[in-house]
Length: 117
Image (cartoon, rainbow, N blue to C red; front, side, top):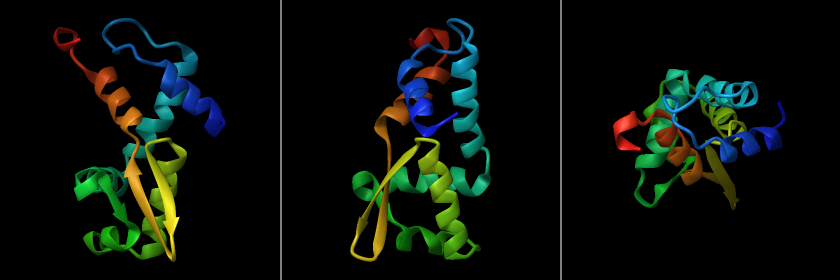
């Protein structure tokens, strides 16, 4: 599934899991997102980025939180970006990452219990 197809799946899927079964296409796209978050380093990165003041963090701010190299952190950030969970911009020599609000909202909506919909 291409990145564009995944973004379409993410934007189209607004139904909670308990409301109705996911289609095959929705399942494939969401599995890609959950696979990206299934790695402990990526899940921590996602959480760290979301919790930074202003909702964005430089890769230089993230690296000290892990016992892995900066290239490894960059790889994990690339996986999160390809899954549509974070966006990034280059500023001078550093790349800044921010959680995509739509992705966070979609995950929240998808996992919401029936009583909160």
